[in-house]
Image (cartoon, rainbow, N blue to C red; front, top):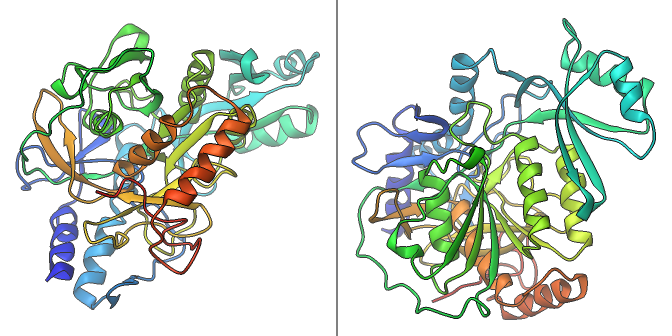
Length: 431
């Protein structure tokens, strides 16, 4: 019966082609009822020409053809959203050689000290935006490519002419998870605490509806969008899980702002730079996308300085290639389990999995008030992030390592004894 219920949830998400609602990061499923939506990314699939998932559940064995088809549809939602994004905004977005969407005509780069940037500009490139990050010892720039040059040609020229720089495409990352649409009774919110004892948490996501009652005991600092604060379902839902058990000093960076190019690596990098300036020790990133040299460089710089990055591993299926930033070294990758502590059928597996948390039937806040339930690794990650924040008041390599060790000891082992690629070290946040 539980297996049939899981299949029904997957089918309810999969039987309609997704369409955008207001922005490319919010996908609503027709006919599913009010409030039903998919925030794209770690709950959906991408991968033309990539490995096909092998479906199964450690607790229930291989799935039959009916369930396999349902799961295939769910893990293909992000791919469908990308196709629509390219179709509707091809003037702004193109694909890289791997088929991932990237900002058209732009490259992101870092340079060592010296005249590297001047040499780049002498080649015909122009600086569009600049993101100095002295706290991380980095300066990231967005470069416009010369007219009539492809991104591939531009990268080849840059790497050959100025090899002391780092260059890459500016890919688009997607948030994730399925909001199941059925309202649930509001949860009791945590009691008010002194701002001196509140854990400090960072969120890189869509905008959030900070007016929701679930945030009334927390302090929310918004960043991005030029001062505007466009609320969206995914960020609001993830943020509500971050503050579910205790109010927080929440630093919420909107990297989408309703723009077609929202969720770019450059935007995420800029948000991480802001969080570094604010010294926010634990950062939740429930977004997924391809490996990127610049984003990986910034993430590594943060981790080396004692920050903890917690990221959803993604729901592209158990045999899909790893998604980032969860798969970068030392990032805390989080998978999702259901109420019976079984891994979600669509959750990714592999060495990037560090912990598991509840990711099905998760009560979340909705834009405009109210509560819904959500499914996906996006909504498991914030439980783990909040666990780290309770142990790490400030960035510190030693304290971050101690917090990680404490949570490994606290985790409930679910799969093979010790660490395993399905559940990592085990379940956190068990109730």
